[in-house]
Image (tube, rainbow, N blue to C red):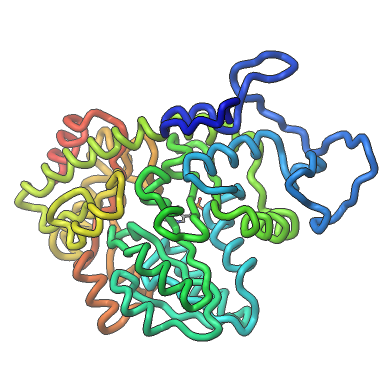
Length: 402
Ligand SMILES: *Cc1c(COP(=O)(O)O)cnc(C)c1O
Protein backbone atom coordinates (compact mmCIF):
# COMPACT_ATOMS: atom_id res chain seq x y z
CA UNK A 1 0.00 0.00 0.00
CA UNK A 2 2.73 2.47 0.95
CA UNK A 3 6.32 2.65 -0.21
CA UNK A 4 7.62 2.15 3.33
CA UNK A 5 5.12 -0.56 4.35
CA UNK A 6 4.51 1.33 7.57
CA UNK A 7 1.33 0.08 9.32
CA UNK A 8 -1.45 2.66 9.18
CA UNK A 9 -4.50 3.36 11.30
CA UNK A 10 -7.91 1.97 10.31
CA UNK A 11 -9.26 5.19 8.79
CA UNK A 12 -6.11 5.75 6.69
CA UNK A 13 -6.25 2.11 5.59
CA UNK A 14 -9.92 2.36 4.64
CA UNK A 15 -9.22 5.43 2.51
CA UNK A 16 -6.00 4.36 0.79
CA UNK A 17 -5.83 0.54 0.63
CA UNK A 18 -6.29 -0.93 -2.84
CA UNK A 19 -6.12 2.42 -4.59
CA UNK A 20 -3.62 5.07 -5.68
CA UNK A 21 -3.25 7.78 -8.28
CA UNK A 22 -3.89 6.43 -11.79
CA UNK A 23 -0.45 5.91 -13.42
CA UNK A 24 -1.56 7.24 -16.82
CA UNK A 25 -4.05 10.01 -15.98
CA UNK A 26 -3.01 10.99 -12.46
CA UNK A 27 -6.66 10.67 -11.36
CA UNK A 28 -6.79 10.75 -7.57
CA UNK A 29 -10.09 8.84 -7.21
CA UNK A 30 -10.37 5.17 -8.18
CA UNK A 31 -11.60 4.42 -11.71
CA UNK A 32 -14.71 2.44 -12.59
CA UNK A 33 -13.65 -0.26 -15.07
CA UNK A 34 -16.81 -1.65 -16.67
CA UNK A 35 -14.91 -3.74 -19.21
CA UNK A 36 -15.99 -7.39 -19.31
CA UNK A 37 -12.82 -8.49 -21.09
CA UNK A 38 -9.16 -7.42 -21.29
CA UNK A 39 -6.77 -7.41 -24.23
CA UNK A 40 -4.19 -10.14 -23.66
CA UNK A 41 -0.72 -9.63 -25.09
CA UNK A 42 0.65 -13.13 -24.80
CA UNK A 43 -0.61 -16.72 -25.02
CA UNK A 44 -2.73 -17.49 -21.96
CA UNK A 45 -4.74 -20.45 -20.66
CA UNK A 46 -8.49 -20.31 -20.36
CA UNK A 47 -9.29 -22.32 -17.25
CA UNK A 48 -9.72 -21.53 -13.56
CA UNK A 49 -6.83 -23.97 -13.03
CA UNK A 50 -4.47 -21.49 -14.72
CA UNK A 51 -5.24 -18.81 -12.15
CA UNK A 52 -2.40 -17.66 -9.91
CA UNK A 53 -1.57 -14.56 -7.90
CA UNK A 54 0.32 -13.01 -10.81
CA UNK A 55 -2.40 -13.55 -13.42
CA UNK A 56 -3.28 -10.28 -15.11
CA UNK A 57 -6.88 -9.45 -15.91
CA UNK A 58 -8.42 -11.72 -18.54
CA UNK A 59 -12.18 -11.65 -18.09
CA UNK A 60 -14.30 -9.94 -15.42
CA UNK A 61 -15.74 -13.17 -13.97
CA UNK A 62 -12.15 -14.08 -13.06
CA UNK A 63 -11.20 -10.65 -11.82
CA UNK A 64 -11.83 -6.98 -12.55
CA UNK A 65 -9.65 -3.99 -11.56
CA UNK A 66 -12.46 -2.14 -9.75
CA UNK A 67 -13.62 -5.28 -7.93
CA UNK A 68 -9.97 -6.07 -7.10
CA UNK A 69 -9.59 -2.56 -5.64
CA UNK A 70 -12.57 -3.24 -3.33
CA UNK A 71 -11.24 -6.70 -2.42
CA UNK A 72 -7.89 -5.23 -1.39
CA UNK A 73 -9.63 -2.53 0.64
CA UNK A 74 -11.86 -5.01 2.49
CA UNK A 75 -8.92 -7.39 3.15
CA UNK A 76 -6.82 -4.51 4.50
CA UNK A 77 -9.58 -3.21 6.78
CA UNK A 78 -10.31 -6.76 7.98
CA UNK A 79 -6.59 -7.43 8.46
CA UNK A 80 -6.83 -10.56 6.29
CA UNK A 81 -4.47 -11.81 3.56
CA UNK A 82 -7.11 -11.86 0.84
CA UNK A 83 -10.75 -11.23 0.00
CA UNK A 84 -13.22 -12.40 -2.63
CA UNK A 85 -16.27 -10.30 -3.47
CA UNK A 86 -19.45 -11.86 -4.84
CA UNK A 87 -22.85 -10.62 -5.97
CA UNK A 88 -24.54 -10.72 -2.53
CA UNK A 89 -24.08 -11.84 1.05
CA UNK A 90 -26.02 -15.00 0.23
CA UNK A 91 -23.69 -15.66 -2.73
CA UNK A 92 -20.82 -15.43 -0.23
CA UNK A 93 -22.52 -17.86 2.18
CA UNK A 94 -23.32 -20.40 -0.53
CA UNK A 95 -19.78 -20.01 -1.92
CA UNK A 96 -18.30 -21.07 1.43
CA UNK A 97 -20.67 -23.99 1.84
CA UNK A 98 -20.29 -25.31 -1.69
CA UNK A 99 -16.52 -24.82 -1.88
CA UNK A 100 -15.57 -26.37 1.45
CA UNK A 101 -18.27 -29.06 1.80
CA UNK A 102 -18.94 -32.18 -0.29
CA UNK A 103 -21.41 -35.05 -0.10
CA UNK A 104 -20.60 -37.16 2.97
CA UNK A 105 -19.17 -34.23 4.95
CA UNK A 106 -20.65 -32.90 8.18
CA UNK A 107 -21.15 -29.20 8.85
CA UNK A 108 -22.17 -27.40 12.03
CA UNK A 109 -24.22 -24.26 11.57
CA UNK A 110 -25.40 -21.87 14.27
CA UNK A 111 -29.00 -22.74 15.20
CA UNK A 112 -29.81 -19.04 14.78
CA UNK A 113 -28.40 -17.15 11.83
CA UNK A 114 -29.43 -14.82 9.05
CA UNK A 115 -32.71 -16.38 7.81
CA UNK A 116 -31.43 -17.00 4.28
CA UNK A 117 -28.38 -18.84 5.63
CA UNK A 118 -30.54 -20.83 8.07
CA UNK A 119 -32.84 -21.92 5.24
CA UNK A 120 -29.92 -22.77 2.91
CA UNK A 121 -28.35 -24.90 5.66
CA UNK A 122 -31.62 -26.65 6.53
CA UNK A 123 -33.10 -27.17 3.08
CA UNK A 124 -30.35 -27.22 0.47
CA UNK A 125 -27.24 -28.69 2.12
CA UNK A 126 -28.95 -31.94 3.20
CA UNK A 127 -30.28 -32.31 -0.37
CA UNK A 128 -26.62 -32.25 -1.53
CA UNK A 129 -25.70 -35.12 0.80
CA UNK A 130 -24.14 -32.85 3.43
CA UNK A 131 -25.11 -33.62 7.01
CA UNK A 132 -25.76 -30.54 9.11
CA UNK A 133 -26.08 -30.07 12.89
CA UNK A 134 -27.65 -26.87 14.20
CA UNK A 135 -25.99 -25.71 17.39
CA UNK A 136 -26.45 -22.86 19.86
CA UNK A 137 -22.86 -21.65 19.83
CA UNK A 138 -23.32 -19.09 22.60
CA UNK A 139 -22.17 -22.01 24.79
CA UNK A 140 -19.00 -23.58 23.29
CA UNK A 141 -19.83 -26.85 25.10
CA UNK A 142 -22.68 -27.34 22.63
CA UNK A 143 -20.20 -27.15 19.76
CA UNK A 144 -17.78 -29.56 21.48
CA UNK A 145 -20.59 -32.10 21.77
CA UNK A 146 -21.58 -31.80 18.10
CA UNK A 147 -18.15 -32.11 16.42
CA UNK A 148 -17.49 -35.35 14.51
CA UNK A 149 -14.58 -36.91 12.62
CA UNK A 150 -16.02 -35.74 9.32
CA UNK A 151 -16.92 -32.18 10.42
CA UNK A 152 -15.34 -29.94 7.79
CA UNK A 153 -16.91 -26.56 8.47
CA UNK A 154 -18.29 -24.78 11.53
CA UNK A 155 -20.35 -21.70 10.67
CA UNK A 156 -21.27 -19.15 13.30
CA UNK A 157 -22.56 -15.59 13.33
CA UNK A 158 -21.80 -12.96 15.97
CA UNK A 159 -23.64 -10.84 16.96
CA UNK A 160 -26.36 -13.04 15.53
CA UNK A 161 -29.29 -11.79 13.51
CA UNK A 162 -31.82 -10.81 14.83
CA UNK A 163 -31.25 -11.27 18.59
CA UNK A 164 -27.67 -9.95 19.05
CA UNK A 165 -26.57 -13.08 20.90
CA UNK A 166 -22.78 -13.51 20.86
CA UNK A 167 -20.40 -16.39 20.16
CA UNK A 168 -16.99 -16.62 21.84
CA UNK A 169 -14.84 -16.81 18.70
CA UNK A 170 -11.58 -17.80 20.45
CA UNK A 171 -13.32 -20.73 22.14
CA UNK A 172 -15.14 -22.02 19.03
CA UNK A 173 -12.06 -21.52 16.81
CA UNK A 174 -10.01 -23.73 19.12
CA UNK A 175 -12.67 -26.46 19.15
CA UNK A 176 -13.13 -26.35 15.36
CA UNK A 177 -9.38 -26.40 14.67
CA UNK A 178 -8.68 -29.22 17.13
CA UNK A 179 -11.30 -31.23 15.21
CA UNK A 180 -9.70 -30.39 11.85
CA UNK A 181 -12.57 -28.15 10.71
CA UNK A 182 -12.56 -24.63 9.29
CA UNK A 183 -14.40 -21.89 11.20
CA UNK A 184 -16.46 -19.42 9.22
CA UNK A 185 -18.15 -16.41 10.81
CA UNK A 186 -20.84 -14.17 9.38
CA UNK A 187 -19.58 -10.86 10.78
CA UNK A 188 -22.10 -8.65 8.98
CA UNK A 189 -23.66 -7.24 12.18
CA UNK A 190 -20.24 -6.40 13.65
CA UNK A 191 -18.63 -5.00 10.48
CA UNK A 192 -14.83 -5.36 10.17
CA UNK A 193 -14.48 -2.73 12.92
CA UNK A 194 -16.60 -4.62 15.46
CA UNK A 195 -14.20 -7.46 16.23
CA UNK A 196 -10.80 -8.65 14.97
CA UNK A 197 -11.94 -11.95 13.47
CA UNK A 198 -8.48 -12.84 12.11
CA UNK A 199 -6.81 -12.45 15.51
CA UNK A 200 -9.68 -14.34 17.18
CA UNK A 201 -9.03 -17.37 14.92
CA UNK A 202 -11.74 -17.24 12.25
CA UNK A 203 -10.66 -18.83 8.94
CA UNK A 204 -13.42 -17.44 6.71
CA UNK A 205 -14.91 -14.06 7.56
CA UNK A 206 -18.10 -13.37 5.67
CA UNK A 207 -19.88 -10.05 5.21
CA UNK A 208 -22.99 -8.95 3.43
CA UNK A 209 -21.34 -5.80 2.07
CA UNK A 210 -24.85 -4.59 1.25
CA UNK A 211 -24.88 -3.59 4.92
CA UNK A 212 -22.19 -1.67 6.90
CA UNK A 213 -19.36 -1.95 4.36
CA UNK A 214 -21.38 -0.28 1.59
CA UNK A 215 -23.29 1.67 4.19
CA UNK A 216 -25.61 3.66 1.94
CA UNK A 217 -28.35 1.21 1.00
CA UNK A 218 -27.69 1.48 -2.74
CA UNK A 219 -25.78 -1.68 -3.72
CA UNK A 220 -26.02 -5.40 -2.95
CA UNK A 221 -22.82 -7.43 -2.54
CA UNK A 222 -20.97 -10.01 -0.45
CA UNK A 223 -17.40 -10.75 0.63
CA UNK A 224 -15.30 -13.46 2.25
CA UNK A 225 -11.88 -12.74 3.80
CA UNK A 226 -9.22 -15.21 4.86
CA UNK A 227 -5.89 -16.80 4.05
CA UNK A 228 -4.69 -16.49 0.46
CA UNK A 229 -4.97 -20.25 -0.23
CA UNK A 230 -8.57 -20.46 1.00
CA UNK A 231 -9.64 -17.37 -0.92
CA UNK A 232 -7.89 -18.74 -4.05
CA UNK A 233 -9.93 -21.93 -3.75
CA UNK A 234 -13.11 -19.87 -3.35
CA UNK A 235 -12.29 -17.72 -6.37
CA UNK A 236 -11.72 -20.73 -8.64
CA UNK A 237 -14.87 -22.49 -7.51
CA UNK A 238 -17.42 -19.86 -6.51
CA UNK A 239 -16.48 -16.95 -8.77
CA UNK A 240 -15.16 -18.60 -11.91
CA UNK A 241 -17.32 -21.75 -11.86
CA UNK A 242 -20.50 -20.80 -9.96
CA UNK A 243 -20.26 -17.34 -11.46
CA UNK A 244 -22.08 -15.06 -9.02
CA UNK A 245 -19.55 -12.23 -9.25
CA UNK A 246 -19.95 -8.64 -8.10
CA UNK A 247 -20.56 -5.99 -10.74
CA UNK A 248 -17.75 -3.39 -11.02
CA UNK A 249 -20.32 -0.62 -10.60
CA UNK A 250 -21.47 -2.04 -7.25
CA UNK A 251 -17.82 -2.53 -6.25
CA UNK A 252 -17.13 1.12 -6.99
CA UNK A 253 -20.10 2.30 -4.93
CA UNK A 254 -19.28 -0.04 -2.06
CA UNK A 255 -15.58 1.00 -2.02
CA UNK A 256 -16.68 4.62 -1.71
CA UNK A 257 -18.83 3.64 1.28
CA UNK A 258 -16.06 1.54 2.81
CA UNK A 259 -13.56 4.38 2.71
CA UNK A 260 -15.45 6.08 5.58
CA UNK A 261 -16.36 2.91 7.51
CA UNK A 262 -14.26 3.58 10.65
CA UNK A 263 -15.79 7.06 10.99
CA UNK A 264 -19.27 5.71 10.36
CA UNK A 265 -18.92 2.83 12.84
CA UNK A 266 -17.93 5.26 15.60
CA UNK A 267 -21.05 7.30 14.84
CA UNK A 268 -23.28 4.18 14.63
CA UNK A 269 -21.98 3.16 18.07
CA UNK A 270 -22.56 6.58 19.61
CA UNK A 271 -26.08 6.78 18.18
CA UNK A 272 -26.96 3.20 19.16
CA UNK A 273 -25.69 3.71 22.71
CA UNK A 274 -27.80 6.85 23.15
CA UNK A 275 -30.92 5.23 21.68
CA UNK A 276 -30.41 1.95 23.61
CA UNK A 277 -30.09 3.81 26.92
CA UNK A 278 -33.23 5.81 26.15
CA UNK A 279 -35.14 2.64 25.16
CA UNK A 280 -34.19 1.01 28.48
CA UNK A 281 -36.01 3.84 30.29
CA UNK A 282 -39.28 3.48 28.36
CA UNK A 283 -42.08 1.76 30.30
CA UNK A 284 -43.50 0.14 27.13
CA UNK A 285 -40.13 -1.44 26.27
CA UNK A 286 -39.73 -4.71 28.16
CA UNK A 287 -36.19 -5.62 27.11
CA UNK A 288 -33.30 -4.05 25.18
CA UNK A 289 -30.49 -6.22 23.82
CA UNK A 290 -27.44 -4.30 22.70
CA UNK A 291 -23.86 -5.55 23.11
CA UNK A 292 -22.76 -2.11 24.34
CA UNK A 293 -25.15 -2.14 27.33
CA UNK A 294 -24.10 -3.65 30.68
CA UNK A 295 -27.53 -5.37 30.68
CA UNK A 296 -26.56 -7.55 27.68
CA UNK A 297 -26.54 -11.17 28.93
CA UNK A 298 -23.00 -11.63 27.53
CA UNK A 299 -21.65 -8.17 28.36
CA UNK A 300 -18.39 -9.64 29.67
CA UNK A 301 -17.80 -11.40 26.31
CA UNK A 302 -18.82 -8.29 24.40
CA UNK A 303 -16.23 -6.25 26.33
CA UNK A 304 -13.55 -8.87 25.74
CA UNK A 305 -14.26 -9.60 22.09
CA UNK A 306 -15.83 -6.57 20.47
CA UNK A 307 -13.86 -3.46 19.59
CA UNK A 308 -17.08 -1.62 18.68
CA UNK A 309 -20.54 -2.88 19.78
CA UNK A 310 -22.00 -1.57 16.51
CA UNK A 311 -25.36 -0.11 15.58
CA UNK A 312 -27.75 -3.06 15.88
CA UNK A 313 -30.29 -3.12 18.71
CA UNK A 314 -33.01 -5.69 19.41
CA UNK A 315 -35.86 -4.70 21.72
CA UNK A 316 -39.09 -6.23 22.97
CA UNK A 317 -42.40 -4.56 23.78
CA UNK A 318 -44.27 -7.43 25.42
CA UNK A 319 -46.53 -9.91 23.63
CA UNK A 320 -46.59 -10.77 19.92
CA UNK A 321 -49.88 -8.83 19.66
CA UNK A 322 -48.29 -5.73 21.15
CA UNK A 323 -45.38 -6.13 18.74
CA UNK A 324 -47.51 -6.41 15.62
CA UNK A 325 -49.74 -3.52 16.74
CA UNK A 326 -46.66 -1.34 17.19
CA UNK A 327 -45.35 -2.43 13.78
CA UNK A 328 -48.52 -1.13 12.17
CA UNK A 329 -48.13 2.18 13.99
CA UNK A 330 -44.46 2.42 12.99
CA UNK A 331 -45.20 1.76 9.32
CA UNK A 332 -47.76 4.58 9.33
CA UNK A 333 -46.27 7.14 11.70
CA UNK A 334 -42.47 7.05 11.77
CA UNK A 335 -41.06 10.11 10.03
CA UNK A 336 -37.30 9.56 10.14
CA UNK A 337 -36.77 5.83 10.65
CA UNK A 338 -37.70 3.69 7.65
CA UNK A 339 -39.88 0.65 8.32
CA UNK A 340 -37.84 -1.71 6.14
CA UNK A 341 -35.59 -4.77 6.22
CA UNK A 342 -31.80 -4.57 5.79
CA UNK A 343 -29.33 -2.82 8.06
CA UNK A 344 -26.05 -0.97 8.34
CA UNK A 345 -27.13 1.99 6.22
CA UNK A 346 -26.79 5.68 7.04
CA UNK A 347 -30.61 5.69 7.22
CA UNK A 348 -32.14 4.07 10.28
CA UNK A 349 -34.21 0.96 9.54
CA UNK A 350 -36.56 -0.95 11.81
CA UNK A 351 -38.41 -4.24 11.39
CA UNK A 352 -40.46 -6.60 13.58
CA UNK A 353 -39.17 -10.17 13.89
CA UNK A 354 -41.93 -12.30 15.45
CA UNK A 355 -40.59 -15.42 17.16
CA UNK A 356 -43.32 -17.86 16.07
CA UNK A 357 -43.07 -16.78 12.42
CA UNK A 358 -39.28 -17.08 12.32
CA UNK A 359 -39.41 -20.51 13.97
CA UNK A 360 -41.85 -21.69 11.33
CA UNK A 361 -40.09 -20.31 8.27
CA UNK A 362 -36.41 -20.46 9.21
CA UNK A 363 -35.15 -21.78 12.55
CA UNK A 364 -37.47 -24.67 13.62
CA UNK A 365 -36.02 -24.68 17.15
CA UNK A 366 -37.31 -26.83 20.01
CA UNK A 367 -36.53 -27.50 23.67
CA UNK A 368 -33.37 -25.91 25.07
CA UNK A 369 -32.54 -24.13 21.80
CA UNK A 370 -35.98 -22.51 21.62
CA UNK A 371 -35.68 -21.49 25.30
CA UNK A 372 -32.29 -19.90 24.64
CA UNK A 373 -33.77 -17.98 21.67
CA UNK A 374 -36.76 -16.83 23.69
CA UNK A 375 -34.51 -15.70 26.55
CA UNK A 376 -33.29 -13.05 24.10
CA UNK A 377 -36.30 -12.50 21.87
CA UNK A 378 -39.40 -13.33 23.91
CA UNK A 379 -42.37 -13.30 21.52
CA UNK A 380 -40.41 -11.18 19.07
CA UNK A 381 -38.02 -8.29 18.70
CA UNK A 382 -37.80 -5.09 16.79
CA UNK A 383 -34.52 -5.24 14.91
CA UNK A 384 -33.36 -1.66 14.88
CA UNK A 385 -30.44 -0.63 12.68
CA UNK A 386 -29.42 2.71 14.14
CA UNK A 387 -28.35 4.95 11.30
CA UNK A 388 -26.30 8.12 11.27
CA UNK A 389 -29.10 10.61 11.89
CA UNK A 390 -28.89 12.73 15.06
CA UNK A 391 -29.81 10.54 18.03
CA UNK A 392 -32.27 13.16 19.33
CA UNK A 393 -34.27 12.90 16.11
CA UNK A 394 -34.34 9.09 16.28
CA UNK A 395 -35.51 9.24 19.89
CA UNK A 396 -38.22 11.79 19.03
CA UNK A 397 -39.37 9.55 16.17
CA UNK A 398 -39.60 6.48 18.43
CA UNK A 399 -41.30 8.53 21.18
CA UNK A 400 -44.09 9.27 18.66
CA UNK A 401 -45.04 5.58 18.41
CA UNK A 402 -43.96 3.87 21.66
C1 LIG B 1 -28.21 -9.33 4.82
C2 LIG B 1 -27.45 -10.42 5.47
C3 LIG B 1 -27.02 -11.53 4.74
C4 LIG B 1 -27.35 -11.70 3.28
O1 LIG B 1 -26.76 -10.71 2.52
P1 LIG B 1 -27.37 -10.20 1.10
O2 LIG B 1 -26.37 -9.20 0.68
O3 LIG B 1 -28.72 -9.65 1.38
O4 LIG B 1 -27.44 -11.41 0.23
C5 LIG B 1 -26.30 -12.49 5.41
N1 LIG B 1 -26.02 -12.38 6.72
C6 LIG B 1 -26.43 -11.34 7.46
C7 LIG B 1 -26.10 -11.29 8.91
C8 LIG B 1 -27.16 -10.32 6.86
O5 LIG B 1 -27.59 -9.30 7.60
